[in-house]
Length: 129
Length: 388
Image (cartoon, rainbow over all chains, first blue to last red; front, side, top):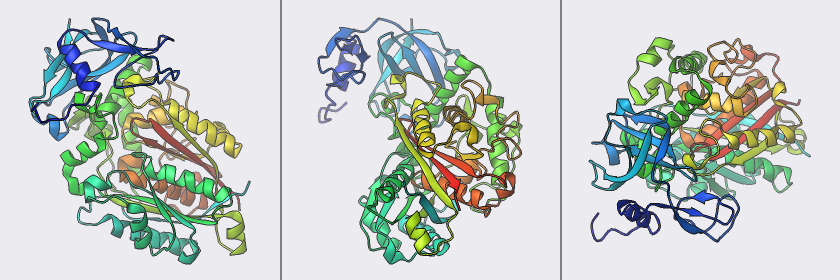
């Protein structure tokens, strides 16, 4: 990312935290989990949100291998995208470090920030534990 | 409450016309709708117009007044944007406006110009209906999002790609006599299964095409229709809209569409009907799995059972409740901003007996349209009935 690029507050801070091994989610007093950037709990409307450490690993609930990407992932295809369950929150990421044919539901993964081969931009990755 | 009558409908052919401007497409559809309705343009009180990617495809915002002008109408005009449900929400607000007594005649419709962007450009443009930070930046495309739902469905309820293939085959079959359809070719299950993969398990033939096209509908109050002696036997008697969390991963369900269920229940209650009364429906089958989720959400099939509806013939033209007799988005085409209004046009003509597939539903009196935005974070459902 160039120095002139404007950051997306909340989201880029979260990717930084993942890179530092400090991934978190937001929790309201009613124990609803959600992802930043956010000021209001989407479940109950509470504005009292606290950063809580995210469980270290999650489990793939559903996945797909994309062969027709947007231009931002032209050189990355085919790649696997998955939704993983971390308990308090689910997260969408790209499965890395494993052949796309080996991706399956139930696979245990952890977060890792990777880089798009096409754009060099940061991408949230899921790497098998 | 006053019925809202569908006085006239107009569609352009849906398909590949990269050189045609949005304004030209809407002019053609609106001319057809006015001719069909017999309503003079000067009686129009408002124009409600749906469009999704006009800024990207034509570098054109503020399309409401542009399209009113293209239609030759001098009335206040507003653009509605709800991704692929854009003209569905426009129809809903037109219904609300007429019922309130604030308008007697509303021109409602939508346009999308997409093929000039090319496949990669259109894929990128469609992706902005998803969560940019959490989904698009992870490489999720729209086919990818529905593929995640399809895989989740298979895991939760069972089913396989071959079941989905029967939906594509059915909708291509339905499109054969529809001269406005983008595809008028029959396909076989093996064609679907052997097609190139787009986002597994979905392949090219599980996906609707990228399309250009427009739809326009003239809606009037029942009082206006009667006072002017219009031939407008079909009314919109129910309207509902539902919403869900924006990103797919934040939903309670990955293999159901609660927003569509909410919209359907509201529309049924509004019309005083239930799912068992529905004779025919046009649902938002942007991908084969989407038709499954739609018919389950509308209560036309039990949850977990819709996957076999086409394969077992329950939703074919000869079936108990034919789905997507127009060919659906899959074969008719999906110019996204036009789709919701086009579904109103298809059900109106099916019920009025003037659709090429009307003979499949010759006793039908109740039809439903289901239009979804994004990964169904928006859903709009309408009930149409023969009332005159």
